[in-house]
Image 1 (cartoon, rainbow, N blue to C red):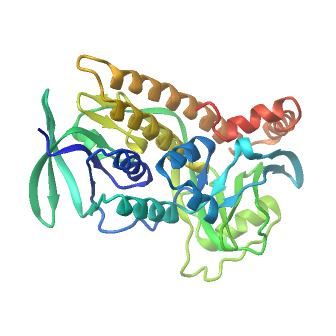
Image 2: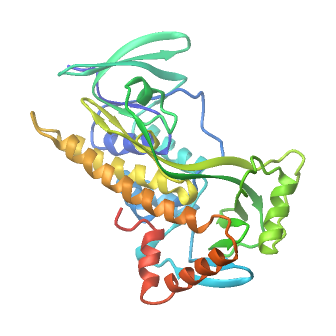
Image 3: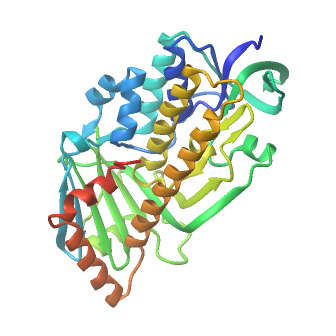
Length: 374
């Protein structure tokens, strides 16, 4: 008999959520994380309905609702005018919570369930046969082998295990560079605002405790946006002046939004999950939410128990691929709507946004933004 039922490589929000879902149903889970502590980087903040359903199943949604900002609506602006406004009612609830708190809540839940997150523990080799998958993990300079019925690879976009398993990582669509920063802000209205300006997209999201996240799409050829230039870009594009308390020591985080998908997500007794399986434009946390939805479905498959000779994991993998393709198409559309534009393209874009914000298309547009149907 294998030592564990499931080994999860990666303790990001998707790996930890899967651990919660499995552990509370009696599955023996081991979680390995190569980092030595919580991830404090500025990451995803949006929790969409599919993600909230997974958090409900994991028993942590009440704490999320208690700490997060519940968005009332989203607005789209351009050249000083509001083009569209979409309400987020109970059926399309969107919560905003920084990922560091998301991770902390999930980590606390794992602790309550008796599942330790083994930090500074990196899976460095994998071998599988018909009866088990064996992993070699390195911790504190020592290597040890252990086995399980299944290995879930949730070690992120730059997955070393995906590469070690020789699973191709396929590019989909275009890429764009963005910078973002969280700052204190007197505007506590629970409204997300998108500014689709000729110079490129600017986004503004409310955060708990009187803060806001600002995101700026870089102009073509611009590699970095230091704090002062970041503030200047927002001002030039929107007329809004934000304040960064210590611009000399507080710099925006720069990232590249792109789309990739693993050629396969189920490989014998190994399953790729979250960003290791598919990279979705990170704006709005859609990659994290898709990973959570996949984790909920995968947990159902594992708890039911794949039949001998059955193709449950294959069916799961095909559904994941379709959902990822759908999410990537939506993300590609959002990215195109935020690209720098000349006068003609800007007019056409504003007309399309106005149309999407009018009945009867408004509901469909809101469903796309909130990942309904994923």
